[in-house]
Image (cartoon, rainbow, N blue to C red; front, side, top):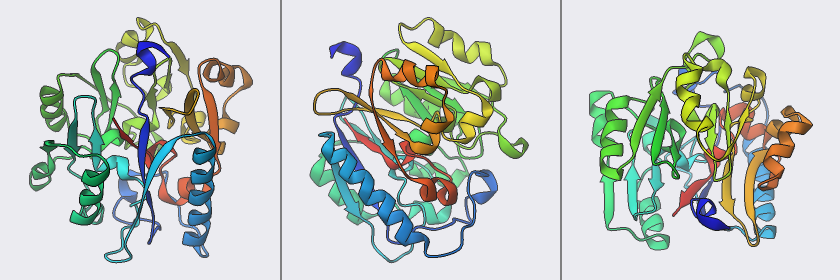
Amino acid sequence: MGNLAEQAAAELLMVRPAAFGFNSETFESNPFQHHEEGDILVKVLSEFDRLIDQMTNKGIQVHVWQDQDTPPKPDAIFPNNWFSTHHDGTLVLYPMAAANRRLECNEKVLGYLQEIHPSDKILDLRSFEQKGLFLEGTGSVVFDHVQKRAYMARSVRSDQTVLNQLCGHLGYHPVYFDSMGPAGKPVYHTNVLLSIGPHAIVCCDEVLADPAACIRPFEQSERDLLLISFEQMMAFAANVLVVKGRQSLVMFISSTAYNALRIDQRSILEKHYELLVAEIPTIEYVGGGGIRCMLAELF
């Protein structure tokens, strides 16, 4: 699959939730969240388990951690926000804005992570929480592993001071920019508006304060650039991730996002990847996060 393909992860960690629900502590900065009546957890577990079956059929290696009932963690299904792993073996732990989300990074799940993916190179950035500075994993940071750049849309959850320290440790070049999303607020996480894969980049340029400055490096890349609209971004069309499957590169995309794309846009992605279309409408609607947010890469 070549050098570009080697930048995609071959393993993933996912968290099967025990207390999924609307998170009132994160709603102020995330207008993608919505209330929904009824037994939400039953729907979410059905969506989660169906996705695991799809992954197994594609030959994708995934480790599933079953979340604990107490303390309740409504966003535990999104583990990519509190840790990331890297090609040099580094494990990064991130500062989270919401107090109830900090509970997701606990001794039990850390022990499990170290068991399946041992690392003696740990960068713990959680002390920034005491300063009110946050950087929520690969939600806040979209890594370009080909050009060694780390992109971040500034928001209350994504601070450039923390990004600078992260990039200094990893040897990446930090790139920050401003955005304006729904309700006139900055887009809360960068991976909602941008995805950088081995062969294609998906970006919503309509929400960027300075589109040309951000997109210029992408145009100089050998990869295809797919620009999407504000409406498509709201359908999580940029919240996608490419991983290594049994025989090909597989792009995770939700059915909401897939249906929002035009046929010609889908063709750009299908030229490079096998698409795994996940039915996760409840997770997206209530949790305010998409398929990419559910997947923590293990390099």
